[in-house]
Length: 206
Image (cartoon, rainbow, N blue to C red; front, side, top):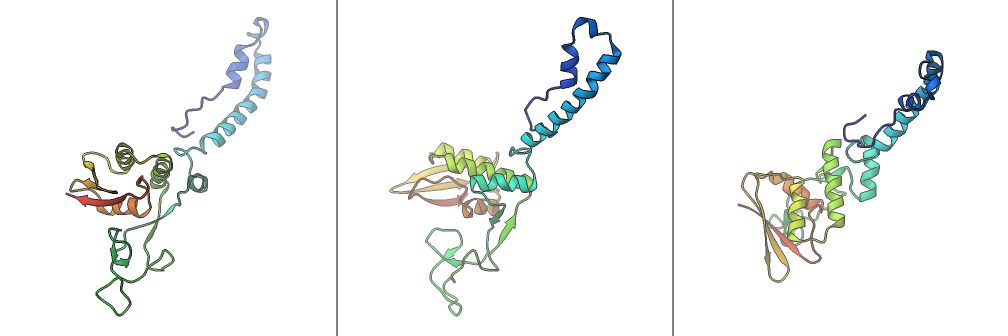
C-alpha cells in the first residue's frame, strides 16, 4: 500500500486469535480453522483500504487522479507559455496591440482552440501539485500571505517572492533572478495564483 495512506489496517487474524477463550489458546486445530476464515477478512480489509487510499491526492493515479481534478476544477492539460504575441489586455502575458495577418506591428487574435496554442499534459506527480494549487486557489481570500503561500507550492526557497500593492487596484509580484520563468508563466496562464477581485498583477523578475 502507498506510503501516503494513513488509515490503519486491522489484522483480523491476529485480533481474532487474541480474543480466544483460554481453553482454546493452545488448540492448534481450532486456531488453524479460525485462521482459514479470518484470512479472507484480511484480504477484504486490504482491498477496502486500497479503495479508500487510492482516492486521495497523494496516492491516486491515472484516471482516479483525473476524477479528483474534475472535482476541484483542474484539468490535467494545462496552457503553457507561447512565444507568439497575441492581441489581449494590457499587462497580460504575451499580449500585444491590435493586429492582423498582414500587420507586423500588432498582434493577432488567438484562442485556446488554435492548433498552435501550446498545451502540456501533466504527469501524475506534477498534476498532484496543480490539484493542490487549485484547491488553495478555490478557498483563498487573496491576502498577500495566501498568495505567497500558494506560489511556494511551486516555487521553493531560495527564490524570494515579494508582493507590493499599488493604488488603486494592482500589485507587483517580484521573483528573484533565477526563478523558472516558464513555470511562473504557466501558473498565471492557468489562473493558479490567488487574485482578489479586480486586482491586476504585474510580474517582475529582479
